[in-house]
Image 1 (cartoon, protein in one colour):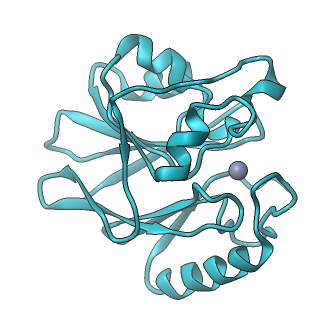
Image 2 (cartoon, helix red, strand yellow; image 1 turned 120 degrees about the vertical axis):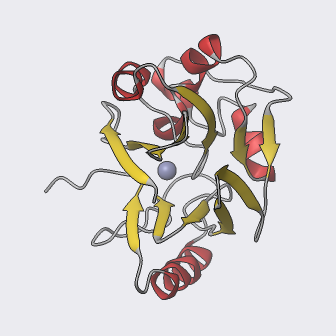
Length: 193
Ligand SMILES: [Zn+2]
């Protein structure tokens, strides 16, 4: 059984998820915001890799600091996400006084249907759920769905940013809601009303 903990980040209250099991020594992250807060939860455990729900600043800004500690850390995103990580304008970090232009061999490309082994007998299944952004991936991990900003229950999908596609966003949302039957959704942001 995968244990899910999360940090609410200071930028746009995005969430960084920390996935672990009782017996595995390492943890996995879904997105990466405030590294200090995440490391507090992680403690002495190592980090195995990062799954990116999409490459927008508020979901990736912790990566440069994390990569100082783990220079070869595998980072999973799709083909567009690779481009976006390497371009401060596309990932929007340029507008946050913290330009990120990262291109490393540790960035791994995944696409629809790919499976990433996380723990013994536990994989992340990748689904392309574009619309909010072409880099949007939803990860199915056991009974959990990590939806990023492609679907945040009760919140309209944001399609006003560059590279967004309203029609695709509607399709992806429908698909995620169908997939989510009997599962728990972990979205990309804390919902504060
Ligand atoms: Zn976003």
